[in-house]
Image 1 (cartoon, one colour):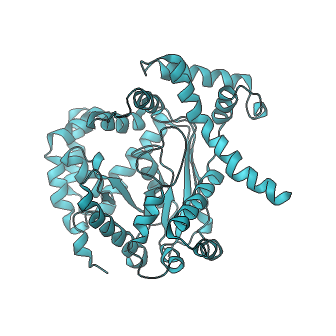
Image 2: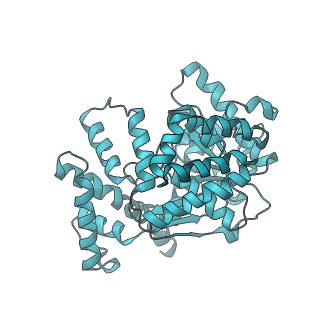
Image 3: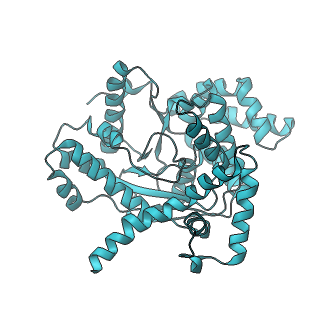
Amino acid sequence: MHPLHNFDDIRPYRNDEFSTVMTRLLNDPEFNHIMLKNLKKDEDELAQMKAAMATTKTIEVFQDQFVVPVINQILASSSNGLTMNGLENLDKKQRYLYISNHRDIILDSALLNVEMHASGFNPTEIAIGSNLLIFPWINDFVRINRSFIVNRNIPVKQLLTSSRLLSLYIRKMITNGSDSIWIAQREGRAKDGNDITQPSLLKMLNMSNNDNFFDGFRELKIVPMAISYEIEPCGNEKVAELKKRQEDPNFQKTEKDDLLSMVSGLKNQKGRIHIQFGNQIDDEVLHHIAAEPGMNERLLLLAEHIDKEIYKNYRLFPNNYIAYDLYFKTAKYASNYNDELKKSFIELTHSRLQLVHEDIEDSMELWLKMYATPVYNYEKNVLCEVTNLVL
């Protein structure tokens, strides 16, 4: 196994690097502009905050005194509260690999860490794509907040080496590190509400496996988890992107688009938010999958199992059922909402789609599908399985 120092280009910063990185951040004009614009503080208040940050010595104190209060402020101003279940099935002394659905660039993992810390669990290290490190201050800020880098958009010749290094790092952290790992089930957020695990992610994880399929994945202690937002934080931006991709298959987002999504996700109303941990993938499941003769078939089956766990643990809100009935032109789930909730969702839909600046009918279809798909996935993958067991 590679020693830790070989991971210096991708790992989070350590406490012995904290002061240097914090000084660099506080001297960065763009970082200062972002704080002034988004923290709702005047220049004197910001100066006091920066002075306090400059005297901070460790990552743990920085997160407790500055990051957690900001996240709680975001929750208070743009949500109707956050709940989390499933920690009772996890051991605080163990390190796990949490494979999660992905809806918001910043909040998915930030909310997880705040709630886990409040529950007495060590924070997790967070995977973040290099494509989001638009400015040097973002690279510094995320790595000072326990993020490690997943290199994106690199030449094919470098991809194999980079993927293997990432795989080695994740396995080393789970087997010999101090914290668990959070990684999204796919590259990029789900834009259409369809949470699907990419087998390529599992292939990457298996690159550091020096044992058989069963023992290699058992060692990683994978726990599927789901985060659910009553209101999609960046719903209108996602619809706008999907619309552009329909019109131009070669459409590419700009750095400005990603930065806008980061800020919108923090500011936009999110309604209720729920995080649900599934069960750790057990030996019986892994033995069953390992019995398949081909590696591609094994990885696909493992991805499908993770998907089912995420669908099972995804909290469906009235908005999801309303969208399903509107999208499929049915009243199948009418008992899950009332006229007032339906009216409120339709008003939300129209107000958000006004920001899309595209054909309203096509945009409406994409919007409804985004909310309806989690219901459809639950029906297809969870209800059908339960029905077959009953029959």
